[in-house]
Image 1 (spheres, rainbow, N blue to C red):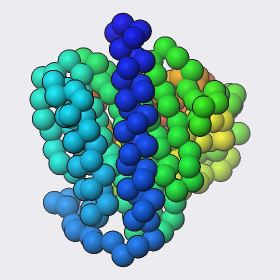
Image 2: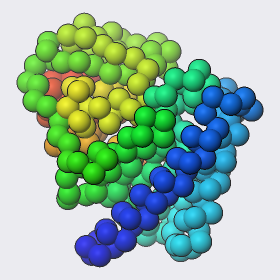
Image 3: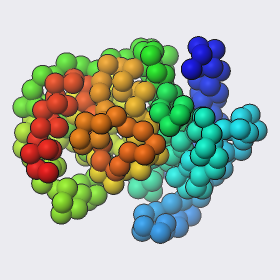
Image 4: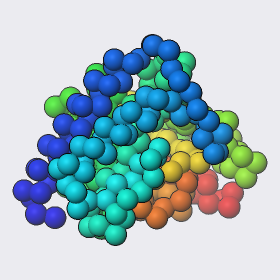
Length: 261
């Protein structure tokens, strides 16, 4: 992708996050209208309003681009560029009034993530990752930390309730191998990993909207992120991801996961 297009789309993605942050901040801790999606998970009027705003802005500026959103579906997936939207990553924390939820925005080029944003509207933090460039949090470059051994690692996962019978042994094995485990950080945990606070993250039952924005953020900070087989993440990846600040910890985690396969 030519450099000027990186600049143009990066600036636009940043403006998208500014717009939706205002919506979420205005609605946070107010009564929320809740609907159940087909899979039983909740969606709120805030999720829908944020995605609608994102779609309107993208379509007005780049009508030729595709969009895949968690709440409103897919359009123009044959396009060279596709925006991937998770309007509220962490709807349950939103319902509980716990500010670890955020907005995830990714831009794909030929189905590969090249721009990613993690925006935390309540804490006022934003991580911006662009392929081939350092990752920034609120305008300052961030870096993962070194951790060579699982026994010294801090592990993060969103919610142990997401793990079914086939996945639970993997979580248990990594919990036993790592020094500590923290739960429920939503996308904020991945920002903290990029900033050197968390060493390893695993998750299951994730859609592309939940993880493609993380790829440029974590890689630009010096980390690694893949599926549980170690393959790169793209539009067609599955629902299991693993990320680490230090590639050595990710490789050891993959060994644990593959020994259970």
